[in-house]
Image (cartoon, rainbow, N blue to C red; front, side):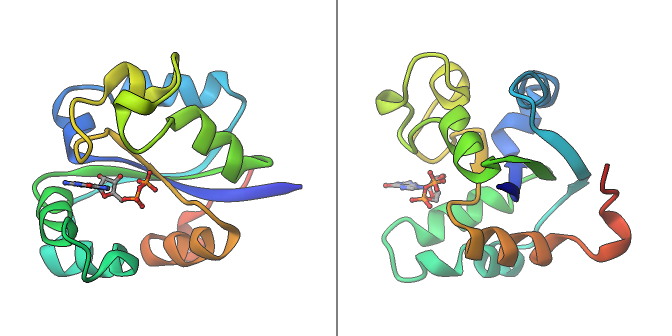
Length: 140
Ligand code: GDP
């Protein structure tokens, strides 16, 4: 089934000049980028984005991190897109991520793990609408 998913190149990925490397991996995997922009989240916007994690010990820290600098947000589209992109990213903790995944190759920390990807159809829908309006989604 063709699915859309939300991808973020997090502030560590942008500041370490990894935008091109990440985009190359997405395109090599055959995922289509149907929307893309650079944004800078406020602390409140980062809290809204990660509201599913409210109350967890890392909530303050991860929302500080996500609002610490610019991010690149993208909508990716492809057959089984949500799971294919999750597999390409690798496990949250880069030390447990499979060889060849983006996090295994580039992450430096459990928090500073370079990329985000939606984990379900429901969350993809919420996250896409959190960042993009209809005019910004090209479709292709
Ligand atoms: P993801 O779906 O693989 O990104 O993982 P989660 O939804 O569980 O966590 C969201 C984000 O919070 C992760 O990508 C990390 O940036 C951060 N995070 C997750 N677990 C931890 C943790 O134990 N400590 C810290 N500091 N950050 C974490």
